[in-house]
Image (cartoon, rainbow, N blue to C red; front, side, top):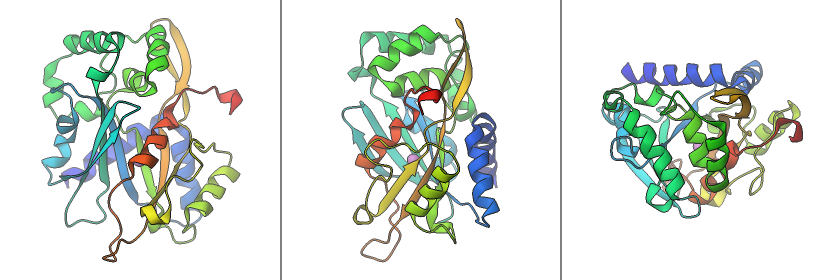
Length: 271
Ligand code: NI
């Protein structure tokens, strides 16, 4: 099926570039667990040529439908998630976009200039979601300046279109069937959890609990040289049944707001 190859290609790029992902996948597999993917996430900018609807296209053409919408006022983000009706095993797709009209002239003009130099054929092709940064020539100085205003913008400037994270479905695990158990295993194995707003985001009353590791620090080639910066992270999600007895399928803006910070800049040695 077409969708399987989309997810496989995204997974391969993501796992190849973020060493913790394969280590955690192996850790859970070695414990005898089968790993299902709760959702994947993408980031973009709200230009009509590359906005949420455009990024969603490889999924909507395969039957995915728009579901919940989420607003992140302080981070100047809007997000929507998509589901494939009738297929409970199909990962949800969560796509957020930066609202450029709420950003500084510096961020707007930087992205305006990059967008003008891009080949628009990529945007309308199925390749967009694998295409990485808008530019092959990225500057560490620009990255650091963007960070002061928006960690999200800075991350997107460097990494662009790719799976920002995959998410282990705790509901599908047999032995580690609470988020606390998963978190303990992850920490015991030497990974750093994102503790912004607490290690566990959400409560059973919210019908969704999430946690994530801090993004892997990887070497990135900038025009000024090679620097180590945070890339992508792995997330864990546990869903609870709603009043109809069905597992909740949506997201919580309050929790996602903190999960976004998993890609915030940090220095490895301080972790
Ligand atoms: Ni997520």
